[in-house]
Amino acid sequence: MTSKNKIGILTYHYKDNFGALLQCHALQEYLKTLGYDVEVVNFKPKKHAIIKLASLVKNHFIYVFRNFKLANVNIYIRQFKALIVQTNKFNLFRKNYLNISKLYDANKKTHDLNSYDYVITGSDQIWNSIDGFYDAYFIIPFSSYKGKRFAYAACRGVKTVNEDDLAPLKKALENYDWVGVRDNQTQDFVQTNSDQLADVVCDPSMLINFNDLSETKPPLEFKYIFVYILGKEIEGGHLNIIKDIKAKVGNLKVVACYLTSKNPNYFPWADVHMFESSPLEWMNLIKHTSFFYTDSFHGVLFANKFERNFLAFYAEKNRASRLLDIADRLDISNYIVSSYDQVIEKDSFNTSLNNGRCKVLAEKFISDSKEILSKKLNS
Image (cartoon, rainbow, N blue to C red; front, side, top):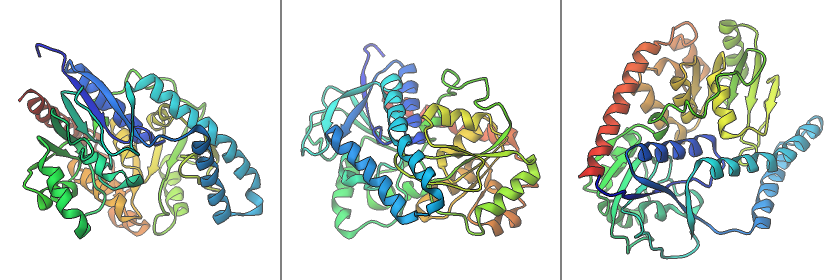
């Protein structure tokens, strides 16, 4: 490039979610290696600090009300204390590792993004109407924008589209100069509802190695089984899974990590409960675990990145498509299941994960994705 063109990334950077922030950082850093000036577009609803705090407290009390057990009172108090600590850790990650722009208040109707030569929407589930700002992630409120409109690894967790949404969706998709999506289901969504051809590309978290942010020293002084679960319980029960994991790797302690500020939870069968983890602490817990059990898509990607043995599951439809897609692409279907019966059927714990083949497939996927992105940026 003869000049340093500017790129704005439009994604859910303000959400307290481990994978969402790490993928945002990865896309930012990879684009910087290509020579671009990169900012994360600070598009979010403007809220007073007191309102934010009230929202956190409300979320926690709703959780306690729905799950109340007298024996767990101390746990609820510990979780409540962790709310602010974990929220501050996420904010510190944004401050240290994301180059965030001025505020574009999502409550307002129009915005001028013409300081950017490119706006890239994605990655993550930006096309799922989260928080009611669905339109924004098709760049609809930015109708005056004159630069290039790209989507990179955009994802939609469900296939169905409301009839009322079809016309604006088609118009929005047609305004893109290029659409890159994260899985086949989203590709089908784009190609069914527009004349766009969508390329399937890897999640941004696969674009960089994270060596500068990951620790060589294990975060705990003992070997452990790491558990990170966001959704519903697997059919057949977590306890059966944990029992089989221990039969495979030994009677190790189970360390459970929680997204306390947004998804309060508590697994009584775990030995260690981590309510205050930051994105980097979460990543390093995966890197050094003896075995990883999760329903997180990004968890699977980081387990593969660090060549950790894992079992992933989906108990809800909105978690299924991206997990099934990456299972096929990386030939890891034996380790992504929907029930305990499927674990037995696939013999998941007695089949050795072929890290060599998985690594080759991942490197090819990454290489192809980088090539597509570079061609589109240079065209």
